[in-house]
Each structure stands twice: as structure tokens, then as C-alpha cells.
Image 1 (cartoon, rainbow, N blue to C red):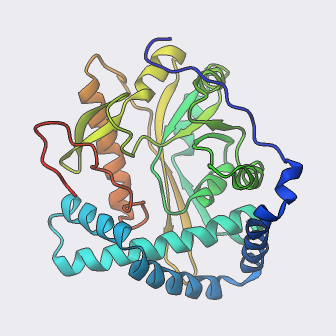
Image 2: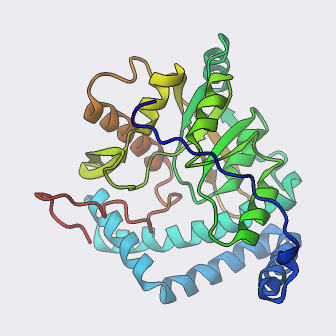
Image 3: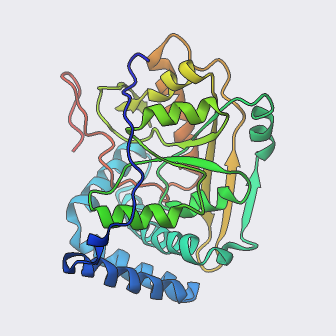
Amino acid sequence: MSNITQHTAAQPRFLWSFLLPKYWGIWLGLIFLLLLTVLPWVIQRRLADVLAKLAWRLVKSRRDITVRNLEVCFPEWSAQEVQQHARQVFIDMMLGTFETLNAWYKPHWFDGRINIQGLEYLQQAQMNGAGIILLGSHSTLLDAGGYICSRYFEPDVVYRPQNNPLLDWLIYTAREPIYGKQIDHDDIRFLVKRLKQGHIIWYSPDQDFGLKQGVMAPFFGVPAASVTAQRRLVKVTKAKVLSVHFYRIGEKDPKYQIIIEPELENYPTTDEIADATRVNQLLEMQLRRAPTQWMWFHSRFKTRPKGYDSIY
């Protein structure tokens, strides 16, 4: 399989060493998070606001990246609007943390709060047994987005393992009821297998991973390193490509919208840059629906080859 690295990763498992004192802080943190999950949404929302204001003051590097990304991608916004939206990004990230905890440990909280549009496109694409690549973005909803989708279909997810083995096991275990399979981003062999078996893979090609397996393509009109691995996956597996977007509507009594777009036709083509541009445009359309519910604190424009102006 050309240009696709093959690697098999082991599933995280519980180790008795997790009970050693060096991990006690993580266990205490888990207990604290479980207590937060018990709280009603009105209190979770207020805590999210407090934590967002604290992070805004303390995490200067991420704050500056968020502001710069919004300045570049939304030049029509005034300086005041950029600041307002940047602060809201931090609020949405903290809200997403509570939403994820609810998805993991209190999923019934989402009852009556979800609406889906375009499910028929997914069902139609599955009719011949082909695998499905669902292109999405790194939403601030985190696993809450995966959970609300799992109420209608069973997605697999591509993820990056945590460096801390206890955290990796805890997160993996919390996600198990949500996803069909969790696929290490390096385990391409298993990813290809699942697609060939006709499964649905949630895949997010919206971050800057350099140009080793990507190209420079416009993102909100700005050249950005854009992942192209999904093109090669389609060529190898004959999977169909659709897009999925989920976002929150409101905060006091939030509702959650899932939108699935029709299958991408004539994809991939022979033009790698044109294909990357097309995917970026699809992601831009998603982000414009709920601009602050995306991880703008990621250095989306960090890769700047010779001849490209520095962004940060």
C-alpha cells in the first residue's frame, strides 16, 4: 500500500501499576470529574464560564493563537468581534468538557436534545456494503459529538493515544460504549480493514500535521498544510466519502444538531491540491455554522514552507 504507513497498535489495558502512588493524582482527578458530572447543567455551565475566564488569563500562548487564527480566517470581523469570538471559543471548549463528561457518565442527559438531518444520505451510501469515511472537524464538543451520532449509527473513530498510560486507558474505556472501534491514528492496517468490512469511520482532516502526507491548500483563503491521507484510503478501500457536522444550539437549554451532507462525488481526482481544497471548503462550511465551536487554539497555519509568509 503506497504512501500509507502500516502499524498495529495494542489496545490500552488496565495495569496493576496504575495503583502505584505516582498515579493517585489522576485517580483523585477522576473522582472529582465524576462529582462534576452529577451537577445539573445550570451549574456546569457557570463553572465552564469561570474556567474559561481563568484559562483565557493563564494560557496566553493558546489565547494568542486563537485570536490570530480568527483574525486571519475572518478578516471581515472587527478587532472587538475577534476578541469576543475568541473568548467564546474558550467557553465552548469548557462547555464541551462537561458535555463529554455527560456523554461518558450521564448519557441520558441528552434525551430529547438531539436532531439529525441527512441520515438518509448515510443510509443510501451504505446500501452496497461499502465503507464510509465521515469527514468532520475537531469540535469543542469532543466525545459528546461522537455520542450523539452513536444514537443513530455506529461510528469508528481515529484517535491519537495519550502519552500517560493511565489516562489513555481511562479515556479509551470511557469511549467504548460510544464507538464501534477506536483506531490508533498509526494503525492504518486496521483502519483499512474496517473500511473494507463496510464500517463507518469518523475522520477529521482539519489540523496541521505538516507536509509529509499533505499539501498546501487554501483554508479560509489562507494556504495551510492539509491532510490528504483520506484520498489514499478511498483508493485502497473504495470507501465512500460524506461529511458530518455536529454542534450545540444555545447554552441555557442546549440542543444538538447533526448534519450529514450528501456523498462527495468524483472524489478523489488526479489533482491532490484540488481535492484538498475541496475538503477544506467543506470544513469551512461546517465551521461557519458555529464558528466558536472549533479548536481555534490549534496552530492551524504552523507549517510555512519557503515562500509562504509566517502567520504566528
